Image 1 (cartoon, one colour):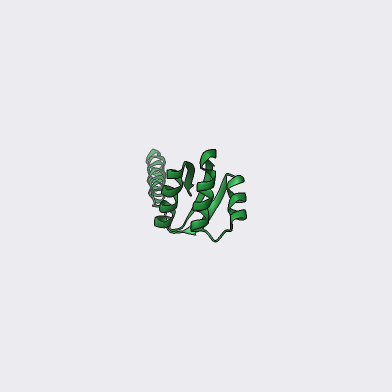
Image 2 (cartoon, rainbow, N blue to C red; image 1 turned 90 degrees about the horizontal axis):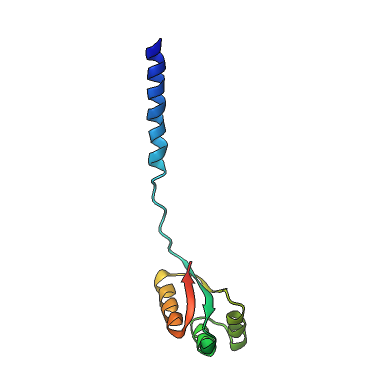
Length: 100
């Protein structure tokens, strides 16, 4: 009788190890990114608006409104290379930008 109880406990410990392996699955790599303007230096506002107009199809008024309602998503669904280029350019102008 004690062997049955001991064997049962061992079986449950073995089944507990299987779910631990399934939690180690890798997440799929993200292929599309969003560029979000968090904040910017007030002195560089005009330069940032010009740069945003360069990589979007926004007009002057729309780009200005977008910058003024910070934090705002500037561009969505773009490649990692394009997003990193935009982030580098805006950071050089004094903006705080993140890739999501």
